[in-house]
Length: 70
Image (tube, rainbow, N blue to C red; front, side, top):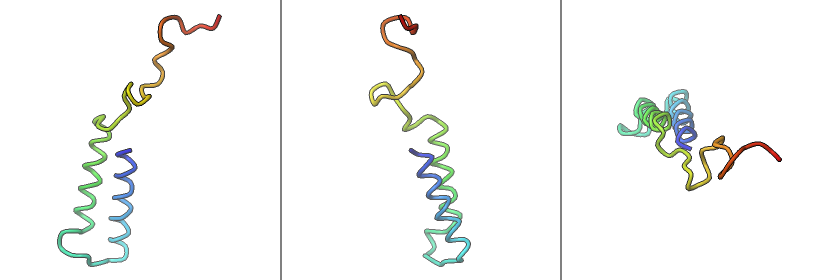
């Protein structure tokens, strides 16, 4: 999910840079790039990832025994 947020922020930064929009001093393509990198780093660090509570961590096999069919 955080990777999608990062991609959206990168797209917005690219769009603002291409049209050379002036939206103020606080919101520049460079600050959006840093925000996108921040969200990408959180995603790669495992923040906001899947957990056993919400049905994540696939590939752990079946609970309670062998994974072979009988």
